[in-house]
Image (tube, rainbow, N blue to C red; front, side, top):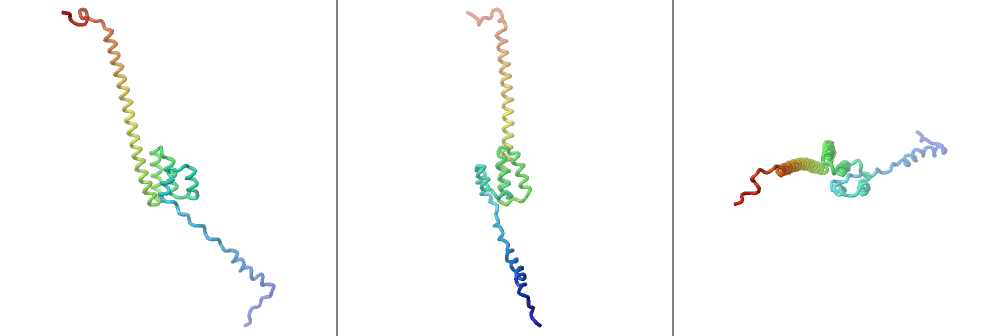
Length: 162
């Protein structure tokens, strides 16, 4: 059996698949970015908006970022915050530390909501009591004026003189 002999003009054509294989080397994959933990979330709670945007840039898909957004957006409205936290906890995609933080914040939001309701009820009761006091004071003043306007019976001019 004789070896296969290729003409010299075919040599560049035969080396093309080898060059194509070398040129097709893929770049290394991008490094894996892990989501920041709950400690970074707690630090970012009170930070200015620009600092939060800069710190969390590239982590928008993280569940801890969703939790941070919910906590920052609904600070003044505990009922709305409780709803957002319920949604996040129902999703079950939070890390254990993030879920614990969300549960803690949920309990605090519910307690704050309850206290606000109590405060509003007490303020309403206070307004009602003040209105009743003002009405009673007005009635008492009207009775005093009536009493002063009544004629005094004869013979009673300030007591007996003996």
